Amino acid sequence: MKALVVGGGGREHALAWKLAKSPQVDLIYVAPGNAGTAAEPKLKNIAIKPDDISALLAFALAEGIGLTIVGPEISLILGIVDVFEKAGLRCLGPHRAAARLEGSKSFAKDFLTRQNIPTARYQVFDDPDEAITYIKTQVTPIVVKADGLAAGKGVVIAQTEWEAIEAIHEIQVSGVFGEAGNRVVIEEFLAGEEASFIVITDGEHILPLVSTQDHKARDNGDRGPNTGGMGAYSPAPVITERVYNRIMEEVIVPTVRGMAEEGYPYRGFLYAGLMIDKNGSPKVLEYNCRFGDPEAQPIMMRLRSDLMTLFLATVERRLHEISVEWDPRAAVGVVMVAKGYPGSYAINDPIYGLPVPEREDCKVFHAGTIEKGGQILTAGGRVLCACGLGSSVTQAQAIAYSLVQQITWKEAYYRTDIGYRAITREADRDNN
Ligand code: AMP
Ligand code: GLY
Image (cartoon, rainbow, N blue to C red):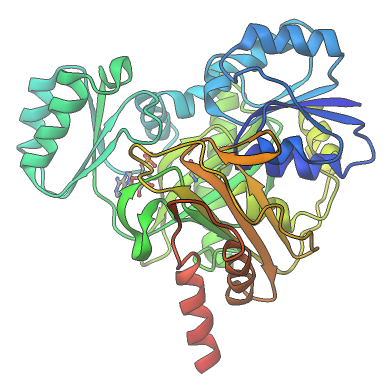
């Protein structure tokens, strides 16, 4: 079978790399892919952007693609699954109506309320004056969110009333996110530890993936501006068995059931961004309608089963027939970025040290990279994700950083503490 993976980040490299190991797959196109996907066996890049749905459709029809797997939210929110299915093609991901769980924060919040799923208290405003009046009645810190897609930058944790009002001005009045900021959600600040909980669902049956946690802040100690993710690890010890059961019961099952009941069954990866409080109670911070990046990289390192079998069972609505096997080892992925990210940064810097020698317990996934004249150059903010597998998060982290140390370019930047919460817990356990 020929497959198509839409996207060009580390997540798509990891998914395509794992899919290529399936004997059911002969060739995988990656649109647009990166220098890493270009170099893998069975993978071939095709220069089509994820938001060009009609070009992707024309390509898939011409090539006789058996299954399309969608990485980025933009394609899903634009309705790629609806368009492909109408043309008789199989495409893994939620339909346009279901992708609103990520595409509109007010849709997601109203859905959470209707379904009685725990989340922060909130109000939605189209009028900035009303938003400001409301802010003045609330305690700080308080959270201001642009309703639509804002490349992960549309959330402001305001420490003071003044910061919250400033956020309203930026988002709704100055319009820094364009139409995505016409409407805002203002919500209560939640304290606790964040976790990502990612499942795959066929609309009815649910298969939870192994737990992960990502580090969204740019700098060590979870400080500095929010990014798309500076690293991730699996398993996440904050998800104890008890917390896991509560998340399934209180969040995931009601979400999948509620979407089906409301007339837009959810199919594909469902990602719940959660805050777990000190009592182990989960609350939904956000939904994503796709796999996480960089969560996908450590998770794919740990998946032992055939990924195509899993994907086919999902689009054919027989996920209950499938069980998957996971590597018991822990995985850590460290993202190497271009200095300046998530603000402005340089591109076209030659990367030295690639490829690192292949080993079973480590892998470097590419994101913003491009090959020119035999040299791999930087081509984005997040450039690489170095992943290691080990008997503990501590071991896996050491392997991931040993890869990072072999790679360099002018002004490469990365955190040196990915997985620290799990590592602290492991040290505490060893000392007791
Ligand atoms: P979101 O895109 O909604 O996940 O928000 C991005 C990040 O902002 C989250 O990963 C959290 O770190 C933080 N955040 C969002 N909402 C809240 C909240 N209500 N309380 C505390 N932190 C939040
Ligand atoms: N790592 C966070 C995300 O994929 O949204």
